[in-house]
Length: 164
Image 1 (tube, rainbow, N blue to C red):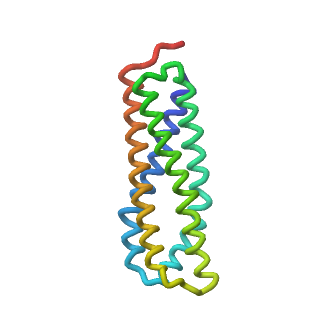
Image 2 (image 1 turned 180 degrees about the vertical axis):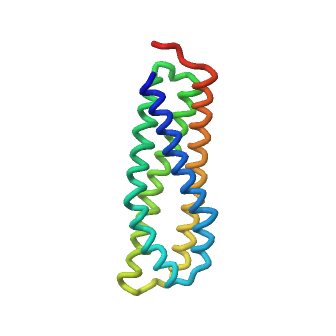
Image 3 (image 1 turned 90 degrees about the vertical axis):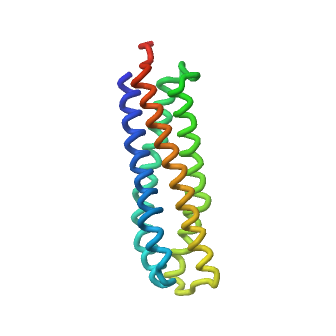
């Protein structure tokens, strides 16, 4: 039971941080970035991207490991509301990982390369719009996963599992 408590705590904390990051990106950073000129957009992205590349993978790892550990701790009760909420939270998180590594990262690499080459493509505005669109998708996934984790935690508190 102690492992389950630690895993649930780490899951809630790390997914909360991820959801908070998504909220900040969508409501504060993205609107400011959308109003920047091409050169300013590239400069800000070039400064911010390495900071995210160092911290976000560790956060992703903590979320994944803690979610899987929490699920493993209650796998015998796979029909419980807690397990179902965890399953859907994990699904949202895996989708967020997929979008990050298949869409966000390649797009950020393209945008970071603009500073090195000093050559912005004619479609840079479209790529910036795509970046903002990906931020909204991240927001939806991370908030949904966080709410599902809160629901799972609530189920854990209202109907504690019998010690097995």
